[in-house]
Length: 158
Image 1 (cartoon, one colour):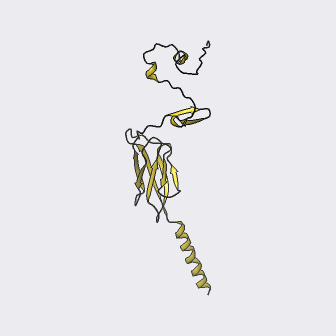
Image 2 (cartoon, one colour; image 1 turned 180 degrees about the horizontal axis):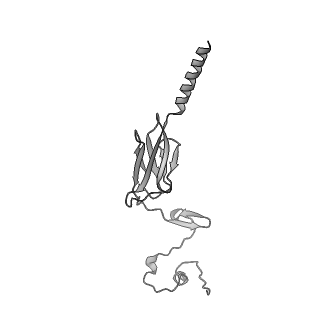
Image 3 (tube, rainbow, N blue to C red; image 1 turned 90 degrees about the horizontal axis):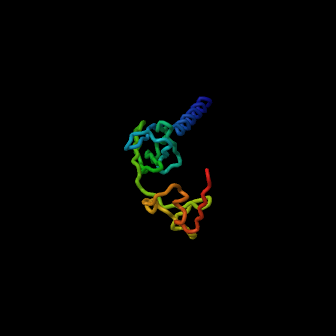
């Protein structure tokens, strides 16, 4: 009876222990494709899961993948194209990200926030470098004076 109880307890411990040990460690480095420099702060997550990590100062990361779940890593970084990397059967991965050349929408700074120019309901004045290109100017105050409606420029000494 005691032998049977000990056998049952040891089998349960073995089963529960194996359930918690069903992950494997994957390490890697993320670099820029054009310059081959290490990228700091890149987000590396398991696809369709909430588990993730961030690269360190040398572009290195380490993440534990479940052995029975998704084996695909999603790599995101601001200014770069997002990519998915298959980590099936790999313990070390070298990832290169390509810079994204999409342009941001024109944004206007209003008070304590920012708004897209097309969503703004108030009056907005803008002045581009092209408009000031051929005019000789000594200061920014001179550049703005008389060119933007509702803007008063006062110059002070020093």
